[in-house]
Amino acid sequence: MTGRVTDPRSRRLIARQSDLRGDDPIFALNAEAARRSAAGEDVVNSTLGALLDEELRLATLGAVTEAYRRVPVERGAGYAPIGGPQAFLEAVLADLLGSSSQGSGNELARSAVAVATPGGTGALALAVSNFLEPGDSLLTSSYYWSPYGTIAAHAGRTLATFRMFAQSGRFDVEALGAALEQSGARQGRSLLFLNTPCHNPTGYSLDDQDWSALAGVLASAAARQELTVLLDLAYSRYGAGDPRDWVRHLAPLLGRATLLVAWSASKAFAQYGARVGACVAFEADARERERVRAALGASCRGTWSNCNHLGMLAITECLSDPELSARAERERGELCALLARRVELFTHLARGARLVHPRYAGGFFVTVFTPDAERTAEHLRTRGVFVVPVAGAVRVAICSTPLGAIPRLVEALAAGVRAAGG
Ligand SMILES: Cc1ncc(COP(=O)(O)O)c(C=O)c1O
Image (cartoon, rainbow, N blue to C red):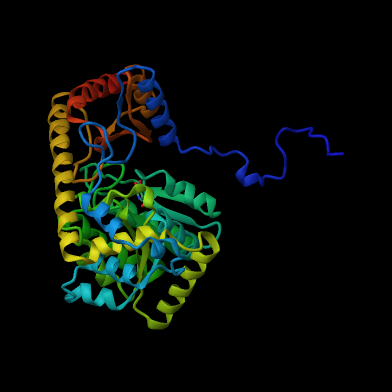
């Protein structure tokens, strides 16, 4: 006879996992938009972070399709090495630092270890479980990609934030400094996630002025605590500037802090479902570097084992075959141009509608400030327009909004912000 269930909430599921939402709120909003659209309603779905063309089809790169064709099926079908194929890791590093191997790039290249991860998400998870003690807080800006919180909580860590924008509208370096000091005092270490260039959800990128202020704050924190800085480069290929700009700004920290990069093929190669990514660690001390390599490898084995071999082989081909790599750059350039046209129209109309948003410098999203994000998003939904509420703003996925829908989107946003008292 089986035991009687008296409480529908069994204790077999551990307490920490018992009151969670299994679906990501963004995917849930996207599902509602899709359902209403399928029922015949004319909806504008600006929720999901995937680049769609003007006919709302997922934009892909022909170069990647060709790369997949070149991979022998029996190679792709076999297990990949746990840390990822060597050629893949080398190609990722060359992509990160450029092939010039000069100056700070060269210095970083000598101190790098890398493992393959399922997308950039895998790299974020490795960072949290290897560079924070259980119970410690991960630090990031007040606007952030919400899975940062999920990843921290899932690993038994928490998330702390600092105010992202100062009154001037610039990145609030002072607030970051104070937050680093606090977390250093509390836990003796900090792990900072910086998502730049092309921050999700704001579209902000650190510029030279931000970086130089940041460099001082990070150096001073590194002198007083164990500091790890993770750069999340998820959207870096969709910015206006040089995607390798970070190298000269962060390289001077080498030897004083551990630098991590979350590299991802999801957006860069429009391969969201392939789950191809890497965690690259830059560590000056050779013995510590080997410990980091072993720790990351053990985490891979203890979580997902190894990653999508076929995907990694195809992306390696795309990164290292000169003709394919040039083709991928060209095709991605067309996608960047499409995004730029949408953003230009959006910012033009938003100015007229007096919407307030951070300076957009690339990426898939813009964020519009509002005193009550939930109310604004709800008001928009009543008009068939879907955006994602975040604290103090709504996130607009310009990547999935065709040009023709932008006037309606801006009009709805203006009404939604007004409805929320803005
Ligand atoms: C800011 C940010 N970081 C990381 C990721 C990770 O994406 P993936 O795991 O597909 O590489 C995303 C995806 O949306 C993102 O928005």
